Image 1: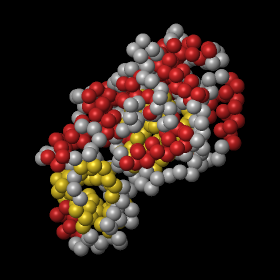
Image 2: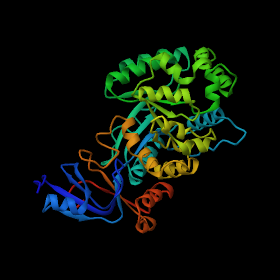
Image 3: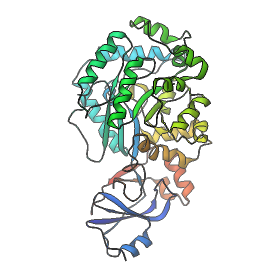
Image 4: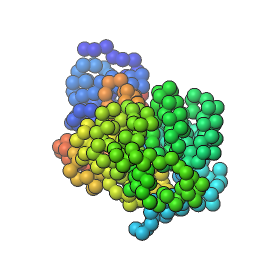
Length: 416
């Protein structure tokens, strides 16, 4: 019999879903000191650890979800309408900017962002990557049990904006992390400076990439909605990587700028070609899909089968409420299942948990139920889950039916 860790507790449930291995019927998770010590069959762990405090749980235990792309500061702008079939992504961006200017109320943004963060935790999110333009929006606000990583997003479409951004970033403290918006909105010098800073500080470099056809056309020097959009905003001289785009594609542009690396997190990736995906796989870069946002904006579906075939396991994100009907990772999993019915449901669950933790460099703490992980355990229940008799049926329900009826958290402490 192994010695009991101090202040230990054994959570026993009809199902335990570790993600890194198949679901365990009549499973258990042993926790101590805020970390997971062991995962396995309840009978084995009780025998091995003797007089451990046992707490019986209903339903299913699984790791907290990971939202790998969100814009919480836009949570007060839920009035932005879905673009019509005849409208472009530029029309939607213009509508967003107009609504943001109309509602420029610093009181509304923090309050809405705080409420959305609470809702994320209530929906089962343990780790969230928040991208924003205003570092003060959620300053000083946190929720126990939910880790929010904030990246200050920089845009520099004009030479003047480039000068201002570079000067601002040079003054920032190292505890304020930064990233870039996109290739079509941020000049190369700024992209490279921000990537070098991310490398130095050891965090992921998130970048909107290949979200729409118009973006790909614009970068390749073709006429698209972004041509006029940028010119109207004084960025008609934006340096386009036309030759590289036409010869080798968008990830060749990343490579040319020194951005193609393991800590790169490509968000959306709807219009990545197979050569693009091969390059990303070669450097072990990450991808985050936002299927609900892509459906809302009518930009298409990401080539998920090709990604998986090359060993790329994308993470999932919700994006913001301005481009999604709801910020709900359970809904994102359901949309992935609808858009890509050939995908194994267990893979979809890994996308919503383990893949996001890996993309953020936090796989030692989040994304699975395994020894050493943080003891932030999600407990979910619903009538359908209670009726599941096989592991495949259980995972099918978890990923294909939306948010479970009941969601609660276990903290790894006795009586929690």
